[in-house]
Length: 467
Image (cartoon, rainbow, N blue to C red; front, side, top):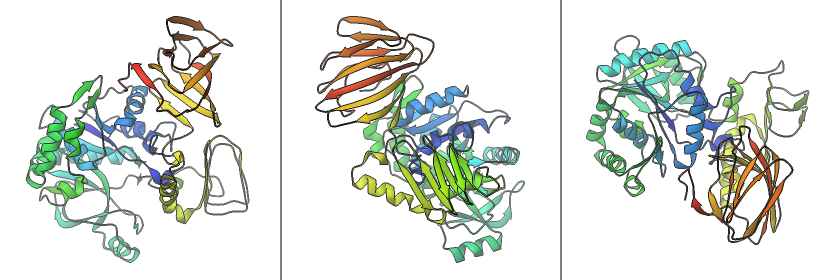
């Protein structure tokens, strides 16, 4: 069985913590592990697992690789989508990449919480048996409340092996009254977005219902380029692929679909209120992270990233502080966070997409200060890592080493700088920064010039394949 980790979402409903360039699946929201790491680690103990296949946005490739490396997992492949095309093409790419049509694919979104691992494993083992018999298996979450934010799966009365049922229909997100009726009937489950089937069975059904998608994905893979663990799809071929969910493309149309009911403490962490549900709370019902002081405050989610946050005399609130934004919302209005993100995008504001702290394959930088003709960054370079050999048309840079050792290329010079030493990179000079040491390198960079955008980088040589 091959785990397939789907990591295409942007998580805008968890803004300002989750943003397009660093979405929720890469964040440690419920434990010290990130959501992606949790998704892989909860498979520990299942027998017969092959190396996972990950499908993610091309912009997230280094975060995906690094987070899997941190937990000792080497993926069979990391397939990079140049543009988003929903879940059906992502699953198709994984199925086409399997070593055998008989391999069972376990499709797992990268941003779910599952509290009862034993119950999850039991359901997966049952799904594997059914998948090997040619069924397309979906996992239906036994509902605990009349939820209007999920699609539902209706079972029929014909029970398959174990607790599985034939699927009568997939239904869209209901209104509250309909959701209450679904809950009372006992015949409906929340659609989890998790599936199991053999690669061959899925591709056969896709060929029947959406041959254009199969053809586009096959062509994109045929013309793909392999770079380390990354599979870079042909952009032109993939752009022709229809954009559909796996439900719409195959599951709603196939007569081979069965559902396994799952009661395992599942949560898709799709909003701040959902995160409050799965976070440990104090005696007053508050879920608190970071440096927070409360007085007469109840049933709230309060996240402090970098500053002291104090809350007095309030109930049922969400308060989230990051380096560059503060978001305060009534807990029953957190679905409207997306409207804030839309307004930020419409205004062309960077806070919609990126954090003040940006992550790169070599480490990270924190934009500490910015003015009309200057900006200051705190740069951290991992041991053995190296920035690209580059130059700038519009800015000069001053570097001061704060911690560690820096190997610097500056034109024809090679410099080795240690703590409290500095250098100046004039405008237009080819340069490179490298950490030859065994501890992280920290430098303060002061940029000055007429234009300070990140697109003023001319890369001459880059070991990470960036252009």
